[in-house]
Length: 148
Image (cartoon, rainbow, N blue to C red; front, side, top):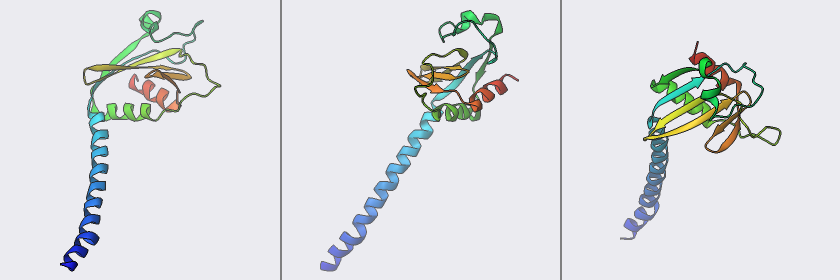
């Protein structure tokens, strides 16, 4: 009887603990993968990042201001959507040296679970989910390449 208790305490309990930890890690990875899958499509509107304007064009004014210069593209390719998600999940918040406005040159709509998340991209800053981030050269290059 004593040997059975030792086996349970020293083998069974640690094994259950290990399985529990692995299961939690698996659930987290599954959740991340499911979030990627939930983006059904992406709609990108873009105008040249080099266009200079006398005022900052906010996201709401983007279409009206650049009417004839806007190029647009709907993306449903999962690899491209995954790349867009990775680019925008890894952006750095702005610091005090940056303006808290976006001079919008691209407007990206992520369609997921019946909702639309809008990301506004300017030459220096990005507005996403109520916060400002730094625009990277990698993001600008990626958006330019979508329209080549």
